[in-house]
Length: 200
Image 1 (tube, rainbow, N blue to C red):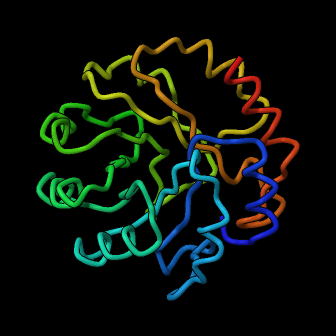
Image 2 (cartoon, rainbow, N blue to C red):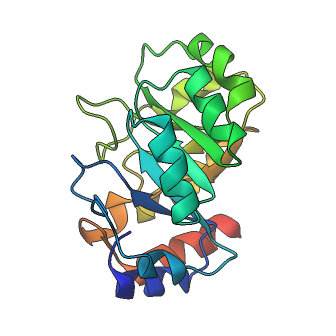
């Protein structure tokens, strides 16, 4: 999210989390020194998430504290020790992993005690989302206790399929481009309808 009016409209649906991208190469980048007003307008009941890619841990912590972000979502090659530094600062950690048919879920073992949630996205050439789904059936290989967010190409029509997955560890759904008219601009009605269906 980036545009104040659209933030207001999406917040009216009361999502659990709202994301802000601090990765300069992203077309959804909030900017070098974003105005704090776009963060302050988010209700306290909605947790603000900062999305980072291989950023210096010190800078991640500074940004999260400055903009009162509850969560750092990490999409690079951040190590378990890196994640622990962020967590020790009082910021929750979502560690993203890019998934394809050959992903080795054993790689996650060393992260389990150092993060709050995993986030599984579609493997692409660059960090961040691809707007495409991976084969969600590979999630059957996930055996750890840490809950995860499902991401990657999710659209308004995917609600029933997501619910049918029935994974004990599926905690939340991360939606983005499938609900946009253009980068950072979400369609409030589609978001509200999807949230209501998922929660019901």
